Length: 176
Image (cartoon, rainbow, N blue to C red):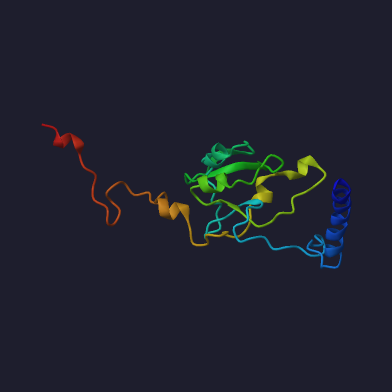
């Protein structure tokens, strides 16, 4: 009985190999034929612009706070008109785990993930992307969204002077 098990244990793997020998291969020749990733694939991060062509990033540091591996760093600055922007923005893709928490935390939708997945390189410093390498010319996935218009930051009139807005209450007049 033991001899039969030994023979069966030797012949069975060869039989499986012969069965799969004449089938078409399942693997894809990667450099010649690239696969298209899924629509919700989380690839390389980019910084987008709003419909007016301005940078969307207001340097609120929410993306760097949400990042579990601390691969995002930036320095905030302010223009003459009061609008904030990132003076420099850096992502270290050698540490990034592509979890997408930074894109979910971004209130301005400035940080978005693309379907680009070819980030491999032999030099470590080439995977540290600066602001000029991350900033794209388009609006990304949300073309009509403009944070400053939606948040009302562009409005410079005093409270109660905007159309459809009531004047502020004087809380001291309600005291007995």
